[in-house]
Image 1 (cartoon, rainbow, N blue to C red):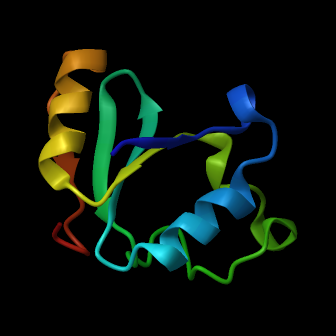
Image 2 (cartoon, rainbow, N blue to C red):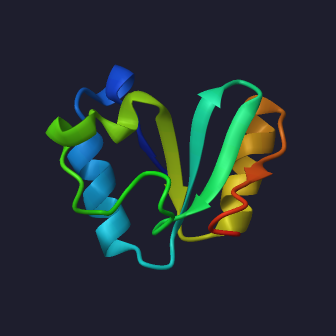
Image 3 (cartoon, helix red, strand yellow):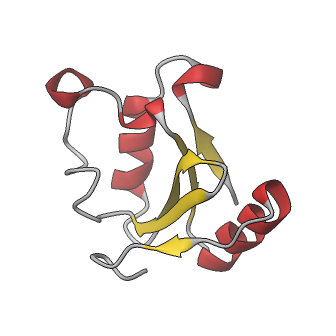
Length: 95
């Protein structure tokens, strides 16, 4: 199942995204910086910081759209259908 977190659509989604990360240890997410810059990460990738990171420390993690799932294939299909783009893969967490 695909879950989306994005401040511009849902208000303040930072804590909801962090909670999803904590509850889905084996999950993945796409960080969308632009229509041609979609990067796939593991839930516990160090790029977005720990799952305990509060919004006030460095700002909202969901200022960029986050698309989440426990199924990597679902995210790849979602990216192709919605952005006609293939996913870049984080070299650090190697999803």
